Length: 456
Ligand code: GAL
Image 1: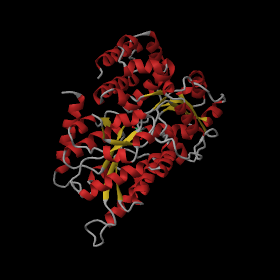
Image 2: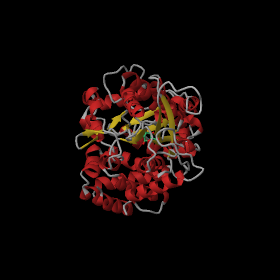
Image 3: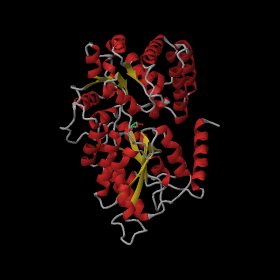
Image 4: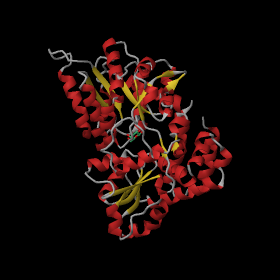
């Protein structure tokens, strides 16, 4: 059994459990409890749509003005909740009702739940996945909606950039999702306060950052904040690879799956950098990515390698880019950004009104206004270039400038290049590498090469 099939089997099992007495289940007529059970308290804002949806539900006498559509996602941090509230607001403005289905615990926890809901016959109205191949098997199973007609009518091909995002939504010439943002992982977020406290200059690149670690430690800081979930540990390695070895090296390893190159000296250097990251983050014992970002926000840690969704956390905390914190795209070493991010998929539903509302939601997500409002809060870049971004902060401007450089500065996300199975196996390796200081870089590289050789 592959990891992927095992995940689907587990998901189906979860669906059975959820269908057991005592577990409310609502088909596609009512928001199921799954997402709500996992919703974080800080989803209150976005989740407020849920309250109003209930007020207009079948239990009451008043008929809802529009259609209730449950939307599942894993956006539960402060910045994410603020961003998702913009999507809910825009959809509610169409007279429909956004029913929030936030699932806490990050994508690795949320995706099996989402898949179980869809394969178990309890589909939501719309659901988040990352750009790439995560929904490939659901599309192949025929349970997801084909959005090609809407995409043609609304000229998605002309307005969405880069083209790779819509390509990731496309299977056998048909479009199955709407890309809503461009997220990149290749960022070092720096606490200006931590460096001030330590009496060292704010670093302008990874090497200066590493050199400053002893001074930070002396000042009682954790040099590098690091969450412990496996996807975050892999993210750190991938970012080191794309920046220290460079974008071509990244393309060779994750794109071409070139095992000889993966075994070579350029990648050895990346493992050595990962070992430095392991040492610098040894005292960072938080799990969630936003807890690690919070260490930087408070000035307890020097920096954090994380996707640009971290920018949303700094905003919610009221910190200003350039003044309170600094951001180094490409770790200040190699200005390269990954154009991954999030897309929404729409399971096939029997209810005609809800199916119509799915189209409304897809349109709204791509509208100029939503793209600006959502992406400014989310930390991501908009998928359309024809919008007003005057309000962009220093870090978003840096991201936009790199994006404008075109293909040489852009790399695809691992989710676009490898199957979910292959990514999970790589995640397992880095969870082990970061948890076990005794694991040598030589051993880790050897195992990595074997995974790349067998990756699909
Ligand atoms: C990513 C997603 C981002 C962000 C992040 C952390 O998978 O693309 O939007 O939310 O997870 O939750």
